[in-house]
Image (cartoon, rainbow, N blue to C red):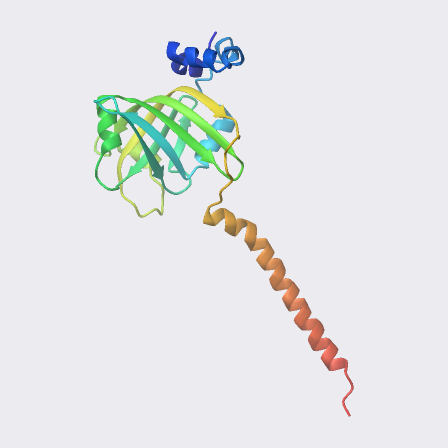
Length: 211
């Protein structure tokens, strides 16, 4: 049976484009897959829980797509179960374009990036917007302790399809924390070498006879 990614994405016009550009045959594997690819495995859940940002696309009432970046501390987006993810929606510029779009059309698509390892996970789903006054326990579950931004609402997404993208054309990029994690052992090693050199110089100086 076709996986959910193909069912959602491979419309007749998409198939026509695949035929024209010579990829129709290679893309047939998605349509005969035994794996529906509509739920999260352990690897996908861990990947999602480790993200500090993602890109999400919504559709407006006048049929225009809108793509927005969402960011926060690691853990602000998380897997709730094998078919559900959620994220804390923090107060931003107060235009509410994505939220307004979701109120009219609950469908959403996400791209989650791991730039250092050149990995990219795509998600399709349907959303439910929640507020603390209605579901305080779920909002509390999405909240991130110690992060000062105020959670205005939660976005809960029912997974309809997932797909990993190939790493081609993903340029590795590193966050400040990731750079610090790489540099810190080198800085510590450099500090130890400098201390050893200083001790060696002091010992050498003390061994020199005085006249």
